[in-house]
Length: 171
Image (tube, rainbow, N blue to C red; front, side, top):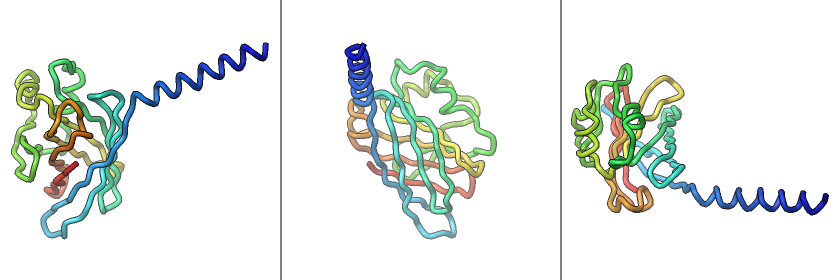
């Protein structure tokens, strides 16, 4: 009987180690720019559930904490995963820069053609985050090495649903 418990316990530990190897975590540094306010650093933390998907969090200098999902855009990503990332959000009227950097363009409007979006954003990461004070954030990241995802480095922009604030991100 004791041998069975040890085997089950050993199997549980081995499975936990194996599953832990499937996820990775990291940090992204950002700089918030908003009209009438000094620039402020913003820290992003991400956890990948797989090589192309995961969660991301950011805390603004105001204390608002944003959490959401990210996905690397590839042909394999189903529409059901992309639509929540690019669809309309109440009170969100701006969009994320196409190339990463600090030049926002109105690219995520109310009606997004997912096929065209998939081609335009191939091998980039998109994210939609929701704050604990009722705001939303949209992020678009350009990857230096798409095969590596966030760990391969890149740049991006995030826009907040209020105050015309933008966050330039480098990783």
